[in-house]
Image (cartoon, rainbow, N blue to C red; front, top):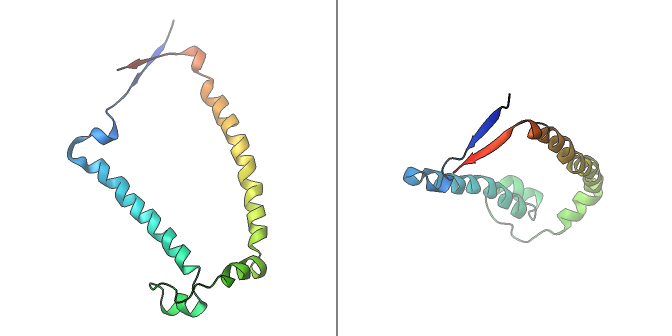
Length: 114
């Protein structure tokens, strides 16, 4: 007995009615990008500017903040620790998930309906 599975494709998100899906990515982009921009320009502030004027731009860029973070807070060690976790994950995850998702392939006939 042969079993078949049918895969149905819906209409693309950009073609849905009323234009709602087109606005959601824009809102999401603003919500995600704003904190990143704020983080970058706040990294150039002095300690006093961060606490007493959090929304203003830095008066003069403090490039020394990056040196302080590298030497005093040991950001380099945190970077190495992150790489120890991320690199094996990137190498091992596609193999583990890819093998599991390919297992049913020979047992089912998948047909696309256009």
